[in-house]
Length: 307
Length: 215
Image (cartoon, rainbow over all chains, first blue to last red; front, side, top):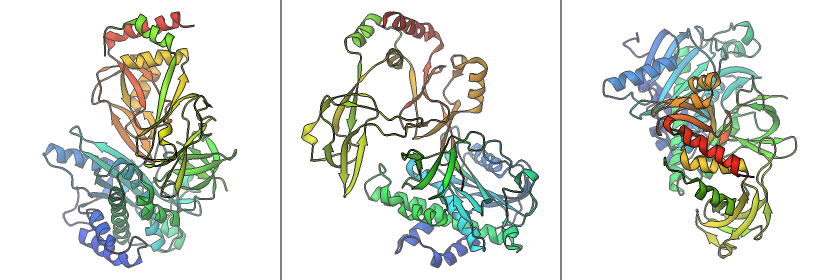
């Protein structure tokens, strides 16, 4: 059962968010306050468990439990566990979640227009990458949102959308960040790393969680701000420059543009083609140049670097 | 779904005019300049990933940003709204029509689409059947898979975010599948065509009749 006293309080997250504000490379002027307000629900409830099967499953349970009580789960609710017994990556890939890592999931009410909710996975990747960089690791984002250091994965993100039978929808954003955990199963040894493995320092997980949740609050708030701008600029039909504050942020953190890659929906099992990454478009799609010189933009799937 | 199908009338219609007329509308506001003439032969996208664009049809310029719009289908330009040439148009204004010659398979599909309940893609994304539906299709074939409102039938994948898609149409069996799992599908394009079980013989009759009658 969750503990009575919050493992991390909302006030701590908001304090961190305000303290970080000076370092933000985001829109200027009164926009900052609006972005903070949009993102403020992140971590309004933080439920901490010593051990769970999966944080996403617990969130699903909380959504259904709230509905059974004729209420709704607070948007921004976070479930954190010290270790997971049933963790997994996308498809049937393994994800090792022992003690020492930061394993959490966030429920975010689906109030964004589809064009903008598609940007949430990018926002989560940005938040994770900013967090690891703030902690001294030179992480980078591989499209869509894998955070790695020198090709070894530091953080993995799962994004799902769930709907209750009465139509209430939540985005469930799961994050696994390797913090102090150093031992990985043999199949992951070459592909994974942790903050501690990279720097040799031991991190206080609560502090890492507060920092990460503050970055999530900012970047998710930024997605809402982009939507506000898009609507003000003429509606939802064309994302265009409205999404620039988020897309530019992603570009600064990503090492994907310019890389030669293999692309596939499940690129490990079914690689589809090879290409060179040109850029991402205003909607987050990956623009690639194929070997015959033609351009292709993908809005789903994943890549692996070949160079 | 209509129980009565006037075969002769429908088939006669396709015999006398075996074409689909694809209207192209302005995607957004802007100044339009046509790049083709009437009766021009145009091609749709090609290549293994449909990554080679079709014939350029017109360009539209908004705020010094010019986009070239290409053909999504093969055919002949049958009409052009010349009044729109070199003028500023509103989003949605009809600009030209492409006459696309229909193949037998397309005619069958076109007729079936008048009979089946079409379940469209909610967003531009990649689509997969849900694990349960996929395994039932693999075990028994799509036409043995019954779906009803509220069933989770498809997973929509967009930017590494997976969203279950729930069926909202009439109960029935999955008669036609219009996508390959993993295909990128535009919003509004049909994903599946569903047929009430009792109307299956009728649908089969349509297919048999068109196959028999059409050269």
